[in-house]
Amino acid sequence: MNMTQVLIAPIVTEKMYSANAKENSVGFWVHTKATKQVIKSSVERFFNVKVKSIQVASYRPKKVRFGNRVGFQNARKKAYVQLHEGHSINFSEE
Image (cartoon, rainbow, N blue to C red; front, side, top):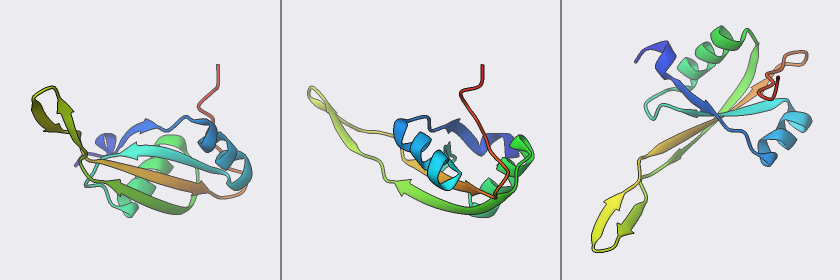
């Protein structure tokens, strides 16, 4: 897995904005096979910040129906990254 394939997208919700304000943390959708060490190194490299801790949540594929057909959504993985004091990532910059 390449370092550029680890971080898929930032999680930009009201809940993540409040977590960023309270705990200085940000959320990312990450590759399903990414480990905490790989996530930490890619966030530190891309955003030039110091990571304090990481929490990971994995979601299994969800069964969905489309009329008569049965399918599955893709498996997903979230990473909640807490940053050291003085470091921040702002996705709403203009």
